[in-house]
Structures are given as structure tokens and as C-alpha cells.
Image (cartoon, rainbow over all chains, first blue to last red; front, side, top):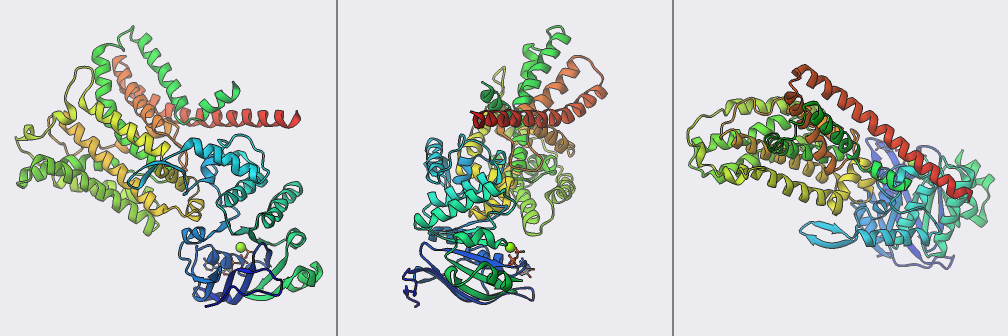
Length: 253
Length: 329
Ligand SMILES: Nc1ncnc2c1ncn2[C@@H]1O[C@H](COP(=O)(O)OP(=O)(O)OP(=O)(O)O)[C@@H](O)[C@H]1O
Ligand SMILES: [Mg+2]
């Protein structure tokens, strides 16, 4: 089996994809893509519309299955057949529009599917609301996100605040790899900077982040490495020091 | 203080509760104090559970973002099948009650499977089931004279002011209220209806949750139908429950349930059902012609939605106001 190989950057590899392929009804959406993610690394995943970025992260998050290829997590081959599988390994994905339930409170959103339990009757568990409120507040504080009450419904938050909640959630559940799908889309400059700050902090908390974006200017300053996809193929996988925004822009277009 | 107000307004069903109290007062005054007589209260406490149990099921299903128009037919199916089996097989009454409810569960399962795996909107699936199930009900029409062998007291025993059905109603309300508002499963129902993809991304089995809600809704309808048939002496007319789907949706909407999922409460279901049954009864008491009842019902449905959306906007205004206060200081 593939080992936890040291790469030249002397950080160990936490996750690895090998020769991943995916077809959608004849469309070859992912062509033999291989990659490595180092620990505590911020990886920018960029590429034009339809390049295959979402396809790749859906495979890593367990929402879709690859048709060919292997995925390794901390050195072991893993089979990710549901979002739960990925979450249990510590891979958390934050989808742009579908990460939170707008009508529900911040606290309930943080704990969807992982509610703290007071007691259980068969499959039904009584939620420990007190704990949920306290822990939600704690989770928000951990990302330096001083909010109103955790009872506030999500649809009363701004776009940036919503990203804050999802990041707080991922941190609270001790995520090892966090995948963010266009987290800065449609945000004001101020809020974009806030989100970029949070992602940078992830690294210091020992978390690996995959940051998907159309906007190189957002990811470049905080990235350690950039992966460029084009029409389903990986056309670049390069450390930030070895490239520039201009060079990458030319690659993408 | 304002935040407390906001919290109250934000609770689905509160505005319906206020409307209910106002209407009760109006009836009391209009009938010259006759409305709140023991006989009338007893009547309302008898008919409320029979509608309310169905409304709870529909509200939970609507929170999960699905509809059930077949509740009126299922309401008749359970008691009709029960009577049919009792007359034509050697089964004892309890087994026939159980099988009647099992048939309702099956209707819910079919509704759910077609909606989810065939991707037909539940509005259409359950509209179809409304007719299919009704025709089965008609085909099963049964007459026998052994109705008193059923354990009717267990469901409708008359304690004076209330009947056994009211105790069942309270029990169902408490259990489902807790499940919906205090357990993980309730949380999943809200998440599934509020934003299905987000729920799915968080690993919630959204299909199972929805199918569970469809089945719950059908079983509650069948159960309420059995209660009503027992109150009618064990006889089931083939048109039992016709038109009920509209009353039920009216009650759900008046009780503050959102049409697009993710918002609603058991309290709202209770109040909505009581409101429908009260104005029904209040208009009869006031000797107002039936047309006025329909007008009032129509106005109330539209009014309730208007009031709810306005109140919510106003509540958000309070929130926004408060927020900017904080930022300024
Ligand atoms: N569910 C699907 N069914 C069929 N084809 C799909 C599906 N999802 C993606 N595709 C196709 O696969 C290719 C890659 O799509 P993908 O969504 O991964 O691109 P992307 O890089 O995320 O693009 P964008 O920047 O627009 O989000 C596209 O040609 C797309 O049309
Ligand atoms: Mg995409």
C-alpha cells in the first residue's frame, strides 16, 4: 500500500488521489487526476467553468464515487461511499449554497446530524440543548467569531457570517481536511478578507484546506500550493513560490 | 423586551393562537354568552382531536417539504378495511384495527416511494392516491351488526367533558411535539425540509426521513378515521373524510406552517385545527348561514398567511434594528 511518504516539502501527506476518473453519461469529467495534500497545507484548486473542480471535491466528500482510481487517507486506501464516510474520517466539505439550513438556528446547524444526546430511545435521541448552546458558542469563539446568540436563524446572517458558521462547525468536529467550494463568491471585499483570514488560521490549527475558486487573487496570497484543472485534466500542481499569478492566469485561460 | 416579543412572534402558530382567542371572544359576545356552554365545549373537545390528529401529521410532512392530499381517503381506508376484515375473516377486532393502520402505513409508503424514487411531486402522487384509495374504500363497503364487539371505549369513552379520544390526542401531541422539537429526528425533519441538499451533505438520510413522515401522516389519518367511525357507532360511510384534505391544509396554513418546508410547529397544528373547528361550530351557534362560514374560512386562510409574513418581516426588522444598535455603540 502507498505509504505516508515524505515529500520534498518535509510535510507529510494526509490525503492522496491516484488516477481518478469520472464519467457523466459520456462526458469524461475527470481524466486520470492524481494529487497529494500535505498536512497543514492550503491548496488552491482553480480552473475554468466545467474544469472538473466540483466533480473532484464531490468524490473526496463522498457525494459521488469515482469510476476509476484510488483515494488514500493517512496512508490507507479508503472507500468513500457517503458524506458520512468522509466526515467520519475528518474530511468536511463546505458547499457554497448548500452548507446550512437557512430556517434553523446557528446552534442547530452546527450540530445537524451530530446532535449532542441526553438520552436515547431506540433510534431517536433526545437532544442536549443546553450543551448544544454552550458548545455552539464555544465553537464560534474558536474562530474568533463573536456573534449574537447561537439561537439566531441562519437567514439573518450575512454571507461572510455564514461561512464563519461552517468553518466553526468544521473546526469543532476536529476536521483534518476541509474542502471549501467557492467560499468567497458574492462576498464584499471586507467579508472576503475575513473568510481568507479564517482559512489561513486553519493551517495554524493543523488543518489542511482545499480552497476552490475562480478568483486567483483570493487564493494566491494564502495558498501553499495550487492545482489547476482544465477540461478534466490536471495541468499544473505547483508550489506558490515557483509560480506567479500571471503564469497561472495564462494557464487557466 | 423587544427581543422577547420577536421570539414570541417567531414561534409558528402564535399569531393563530391570538386570532383564536379573539374569535372565541367574538362568538361569546355575539351569541350572548351561549358559546361557552358545557354542551358546546364538550362538542368542540370531541371533534377537535379527530381533525387535529390528521393536521399534526400533515404539518410534520409539510415541514419536511411534502404534501399529502390523500389524507381524507386514508382516513376512511383504515376504519373501512377494519370493518371489512372483521365481517369477512375470523380476525379479532384488535387485529383488524392493527391491519387497518398497517394499510394506512402502506399508503404512506407508496406516497413516499413514488415521490422520492420516481421524482413525482407529492402534490400529484397524493392527488392520484386520493382517488385510488377512495375507490378501494368504496369497494370495501361493509355492513354487519356486530360493531359493538369493537373495543370502542378504549378510543371514545365518554368521560363527560372529554372523551378518550381527547386523551389520545394529548398523548400524540406530547410525543410528536417532543420528537419534532426536542430530538435528533425532529432536527433532521426541519433540516430536510429547509434545505434538502445541506441536510444530505451533513449525512442525514433525507429519503428515509421523508418516507417516515409520509407514513406517519397516513397512520395518523387512519387512526383519526377509526376514532371518528367509532364515534359514529362503528359504521363507516364510503364518503367518510371527503374534502378533509382542504380543511387540513387550511388548518396547517392558519397554524403558521410554511408551504416550502422547514417551518412549522405542533402547537400551530393544534391551534389551526381548533380554529377551523371552532369557527365552523361558532357560525352554526350564531345561526349564520353556511356560506358565511366558507367566506370566513377563506378570509382566514389568506389573512393568516398575510399576518404571518408581515409579522415575520416585522420581527426581522426588530432584529436588524437591534443589530445596528449594537454596531453603533
Ligand atoms: N451531475 C452531472 N451530470 C452530468 N454532467 C455533469 C454533472 N456534473 C458535472 N457535469 C459535467 O462535468 C464537467 C465538469 O463539471 P464540474 O462541475 O466538475 O466543473 P467545475 O470545475 O466545478 O465548474 P464551475 O467552475 O462552473 O463550478 C462539466 O462538463 C459538467 O457539465
Ligand atoms: Mg463547480
